Amino acid sequence: MSPTMKTSDLFGRDPAGYARFRPRYPAALFEYLGGLAPSRRRAWDCATGNGQAAVGLADHFDEVIATDASAEQLAHAERRANIRYFQAPADTVEVEGSSVDLVTVAQALHWLDLPLFYDEVRRVARPGGVLAAWCYHHITIGDAVDPVLRRLMLETVGPYWPPGRRFVEERYQTIAFPFDEIRAPELTMRAEWSLDELVGYVSTWSAVQRYREATQVDPVAAVRPALAEAWGSPEEKLEVRWPLHFRLGLVAEGVA
Image (spheres, rainbow, N blue to C red):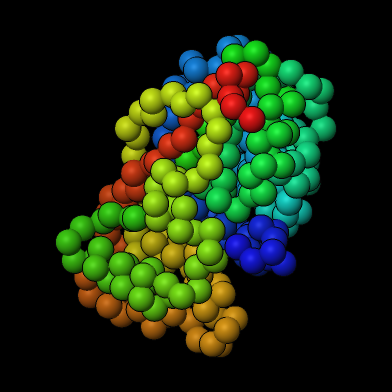
């Protein structure tokens, strides 16, 4: 990401679409993370967006603090009695030190100022606390649809992905992560979608939005006929899959 680009610039453009069309993480993910934490008193979901991960955490923790730089995203977040939403940068959370059992960053670690964020994680984590970051990249539907999506992602809008996106393409394995690592589970996010739901999701990609602004052309509308031909009946629900890629670590034993 360029020094002048903010995550709020990227994801504040269409917060309603982002909230409606982004897929939901599997329940097994939050069950697993709850078991890793030293207790289930408090979790902090950083860069929460519209609260997708925060809502999952709320089923397993007494309190969830959820922060994001974008007020527009937070305005569309799903509310729960035990979730407290705050607009704040990733290096600041208004909680006392050594009070957080689990810190999560879902599909957003590559946008953050990592040294500052990691310092804040160390400040707020209680002994034995865990940092869990994950991302997803390639979407898989089937042999007919997948090549059309790949061309859109890699060729048509490929030059418009912000630089930090490369860490997602590398499955977070090359991103700095100075903590004692925990072996990650193998989990896949799944959804049953119609063609319209897929198109809505693709329209939330940051590269698609930047392409539109730069060219005044909608790349999703241009590719829709090819998607429709590959899909079959547009109302038919197809299984959509995203493998999740993790970096998990014990914070207290992390190396500064």
